[in-house]
Image 1 (cartoon, rainbow, N blue to C red):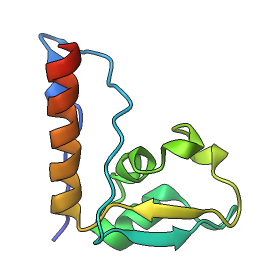
Image 2 (cartoon, rainbow, N blue to C red):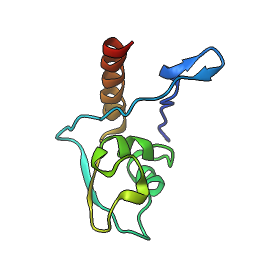
Image 3 (tube, rainbow, N blue to C red):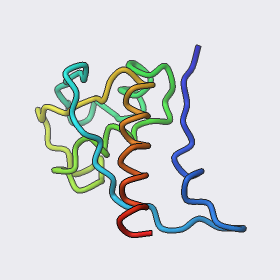
Image 4 (spheres, one colour):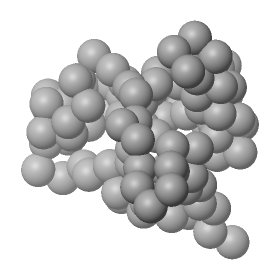
Length: 105
């Protein structure tokens, strides 16, 4: 069964979407690590492998802020963190979004 989370729903306002902050997903001992192979690896494929959906590559990027939010910045051979399992990773993301909204409204 595919898993999916709409990260935009927390930021929808009237007919638009407010800017989405760069939320970092905190580490967990359940997270996985993957070696990124330039020209072979893609975040949609990694997302599909671990989450059974190709739409959560954004969540992997949120766990790896050292790459600046762009998959093209991930160097060959880099070890990337995959927040895992999916439901727990989404919960960590939602917690960080809630904290951000409390601090910055």
